[in-house]
Image 1 (cartoon, rainbow, N blue to C red):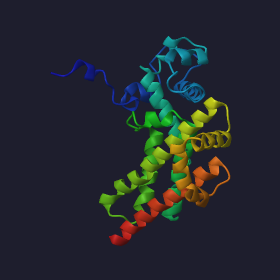
Image 2 (image 1 turned 45 degrees about the horizontal axis):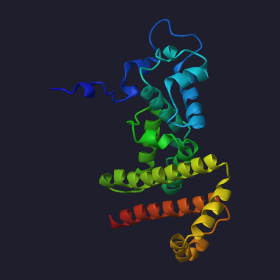
Image 3 (image 1 turned 180 degrees about the vertical axis):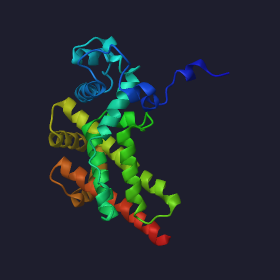
Image 4 (image 1 turned 90 degrees about the vertical axis):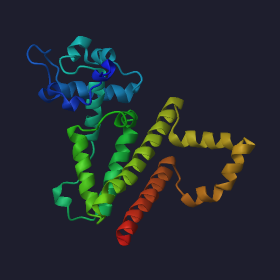
Amino acid sequence: MVNQGARSVRASVWLEEKARRGGRSGGQPSGLDRDRITGASMRLLDAEGLAKFSMRRLAAELNVTAMSLYWYVDTKDDLLELALDAAFGELRLPGPEAAGEDWREQLRGLAAEYRAVLARHPWLSPLAGRYLNIGPNSLAFSRVVQRVVRQAGLPAHGITGAISAVFQFVYGYGTIESHFAARVAAAGMTPDEYFRLAMDAVNETPETAEVIRESKDIMAARGGDTVQEMLDRDFAFALDLLIAGIEAMVERG
């Protein structure tokens, strides 16, 4: 027997015929369309976060009734999935004309783009882990990533592993970076002010101060006068390690 609760679970808004039409047929509220609703959803998510997002709050933002939104989506999940794919649409992707360029630089560019959009939209990472990511912008990103990694010369069975190594790293890095930005904003400080305050606090406690002393040379060698510089340098070096790993696997054959 099929579980009744399982029947109500929808795989993706992109698999629904209504999503392809852009709205219910006939009588939809004037002044609304799916793009406008999606854009407003993204602005609201950026301003107030995922936890506070609701159909009622979005309707108030658009100055319409909540029922008006249901001409275009069935559930809040639909809206979140649309916003997720719209965020992927912000990624600047190399075109077909870049096919002959160095795959390493293209991969670095794609990784930097993904990191930036994760950091810019703190709500993105939990949604990317919740939904299927089969919207048109997400698929376009996946196709380009696959095309670039293929150029490295890995055997076919290693392509998905290489993609996972790079982009799951970027996903984690961008997620932590966005969480840090949210803490900083909540504290009403700049990232550098927050960092200095945190370092002062851990240096005042013997247990944590010892760890800081042990890693003092590492911190000094990493360099960077600001938090952003430190984050950028760590990201670039970690990405270089991953690219070197791909090159090593190609050499190994």
